[in-house]
Image (cartoon, rainbow, N blue to C red):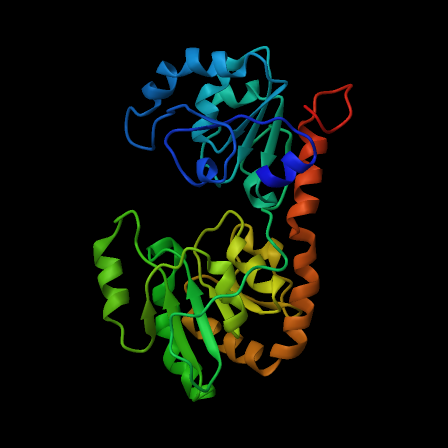
Length: 318
């Protein structure tokens, strides 16, 4: 999005807690700590209020990307502020009403924002991502893949439990899990996943979108998901998907057209859906590629630009 907005003549200053990919991309940046998710971490954001006001003093718009950044809203009264919510939240802090514009990553996210007039802007993707060599060895048979964090919310154990039925219906199918547990939240769950012999295990891949051309069916067996970028990335290259009917996933997948939707926690439904998609992969894959067009990054940047530009001035150059 930053590259696209720069092409639209926006003069941007990026504020991040520590150096990262945005700095390496060569964009002007500044450090601004806002605290983490732990108890009492919000106090760090309060300490950053003076610096936030200083950095924003000559800017027309301040875009706060994520709910943690919303802690800065009281410091920015008088500035045009945009709060972009990417998570399904249980509670809407009162200070979020200070934002001039609220963006939501899906309708599912917006539905949890109470009376805030949130505008839905689905997460952007590259419709023609780069290719890469997959971590699994080449061989015959379709690849049925999970890609994501290894944690209970993502539900990879359900795909493992579905694997015997998938292989019974498609004996040459290979079920692969790509991912890791970066936050160390549930070691017992991770151990159970790693111990499973019904699937192939591979570590984290930085650019998951680059793998999608090598996958025949992508599976997202999540129990909660704000949007599901991994689904749209797969669909963009013609890979149909199987996902649970939760959160924003149902907004990405049209059941029976470009993939299948199932109930969470039902490995039997998961297996049946995977076999159905494998049997109709060509037609579903073609429909998936067409459907992914609405998540194009260029369209996203232009929509966001229209929503956040100050009233009374044309988009571009703010």
